[in-house]
Length: 77
Image 1: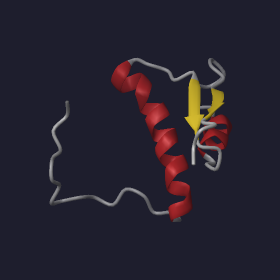
Image 2 (image 1 turned 135 degrees about the horizontal axis):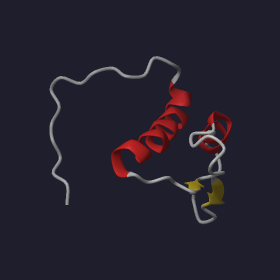
Image 3 (image 1 turned 30 degrees about the vertical axis):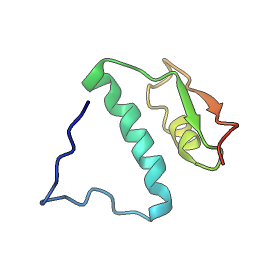
Image 4 (image 1 turned 60 degrees about the horizontal axis):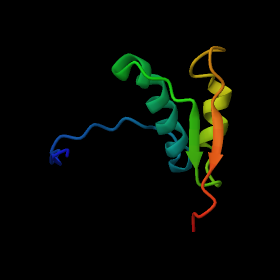
């Protein structure tokens, strides 16, 4: 279990509109998965109203090596 750490010196790391933050975060997570964990995500589970999957597909995070598959959460309210 991870311990929550209070951050008193947080750095701003996103300059665009708030609606794009989820997509940008998803791309960053996919990109760093290889360098930090030696893992490539093959599937993307979304709630259906996010542009995260579209952005991941467009950015080709893993080049042409792996095409990420989209899964949908059908029970999401």
